[in-house]
Image (cartoon, rainbow, N blue to C red; front, side, top):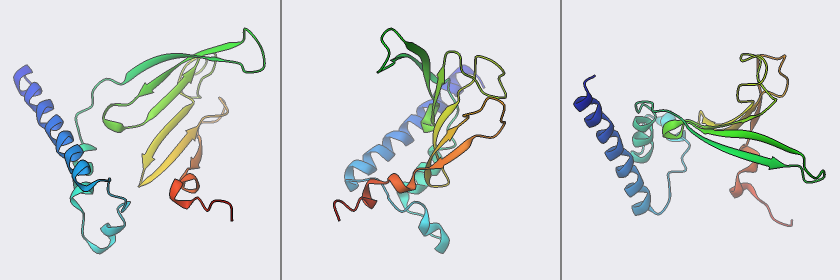
Length: 150
């Protein structure tokens, strides 16, 4: 794409994101339907906008460096990076000295958080010799499920 067309393309997507943000402000909350209305063939405007936003052109992920201090051992640290995927694609964590099977050695992002099929989930590559991650569904941690001191 030419530079002018590419610029206009990104401007249109930004306008769509702004429209979704305004809708959420007007409604006071984001849609909580988790696409359950899709079963009866309807889609609310909020979910329709989100489905469009999910198809946005991909930009470069944002990388943020950090250092974790060991809470029990003085002068013990691990350095890493947080990778924020563009357009809400997920958040990944990497740590110096740790990796994933596909990267071999010190590399890869062994922790990834995403929203997939309407569910928030954590993917953990806890063993560098395993190709598949452990998937932890966070549905049980949803604040609305809290029962208090029953």
